[in-house]
Image (cartoon, rainbow, N blue to C red; front, side, top):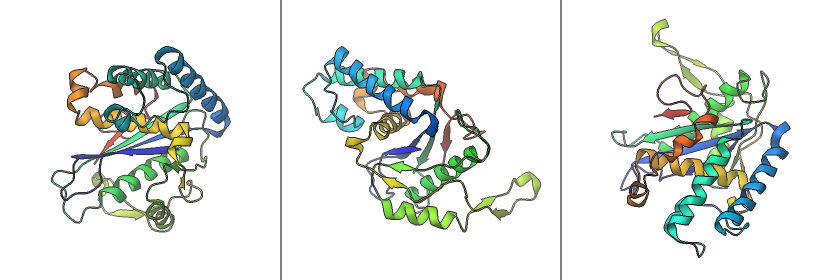
Length: 249
């Protein structure tokens, strides 16, 4: 699972109202197919929009900072093509967590709660073999953009020992300790500039954030619903409430 985030995780004086995580999952048996598809995508973006192959796709920076000498509309078009090409890959799956910070108690740890939720959904879907090409009781690794590695490692190690899950209120409530067993190793951080799958997770997270709180440029160009282009590959097992593939906290 390749993961990236969008938004700030702070509660006090934060510039964003939401904190978003997107986890893009591919089975190891299709990893080479996935990488080849992303290389083909970069070649298409170069041919169609003159985007240099080695330019990192970091969506917020890409839209707002002009990292390449292309018009802003063209940069948005490259991200739209990226979403559409991703949606064609029926062997990948995306799970998303959205935290709305308004109304949260000051003791609420946005960062840890969001990541804990994503790890739990990853564990659940692995255990039940519900990822494309997966098998029941598969195992999985988590690869991130190299941010907050120590905090994530501590969280995964804790969840492997203590992981209380609330029981269904219809059956008496309470909770059970269900340590995660399917996530192997600590989360592995990589520089997103050199990792195409993490860049794809970045695009998903950015447009998910824009779905909830679009900036003026995104609204002007009617791109606040671009995330919905990913509907074919969203993880429908992530939640029984709300949009498919999106867990709202």
